[in-house]
Image (cartoon, helix red, strand yellow):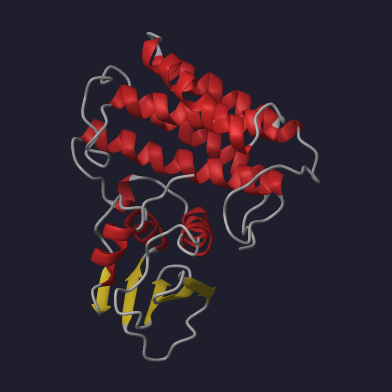
Length: 260
């Protein structure tokens, strides 16, 4: 799962997304978040800021796989209690950016996705996409609905990188439930129509397997859209993906739960 962007690109996009999320959230802390129905905006900001502080602690070596889980509740409570949750979010994003930039290139730290790039790059990439997706959640709260992809201003190359991360990093994990009940293999080709990138996902009774490129001439299902439409749809933040063949989108949305 090689990263397709440079380290500096991820850090810049991370902080830019945090700024968008803070701006989208001004004066609407009590509003519901259409793309995360269980949260209001303050809870969204508290969660995102908690993740930033959690990741910064890991990058700095202050937290490990065990203590990181214990620290998250305290961080989130802090975010819920401050008056300026947007400012608290930006402080955490800035500190995370500093931690990443100060870390050595050969940083050795815990990371939790399959086939990941080196730790410093992997954490920058993961937090970039975490924050970018939650900025979309903030936009949905501001608009009162799920935004169309073209309203999000997400760069196509960034979106394609996020598609790669969710397909090859998250979906293929042993813990995920993306397994067909019959054990039969279902092949899915995912095509980003605006930038010419594609992936082939195979679902079966075993953990999912994904390769870059359209390696099946006649897949059981084909998903098409711009890179940003696919990015949002695969993160369950949009409904603009065009689907042919077997209904894998419903299966995906029911069975993939993205957590640490």
